[in-house]
Amino acid sequence: MTSTTGTTGTTGTACPYCGWPDHAEPFQVVSRHATAAGSTVWTRCGCGSLQVRAVDARGMRVMSRSRPADVPAPGGR
Image (cartoon, rainbow, N blue to C red; front, side, top):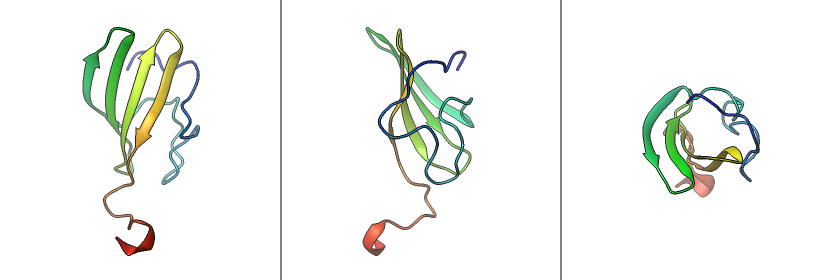
């Protein structure tokens, strides 16, 4: 990802599992897809959390993220 400046999404400004800043370069880019407004980038954080990032004229925002595979879901699921 060449530019990650701009606003952040509603999920916060850092990974809630490991604290890696959302505006930093992702650990791994899984895939990148062009959209009418810019692009959607699927990334994986160093802790294993999968993230969906929207990149457009407003900047980069983390739109959604999963928990890492080794973190149990709330309620033990």
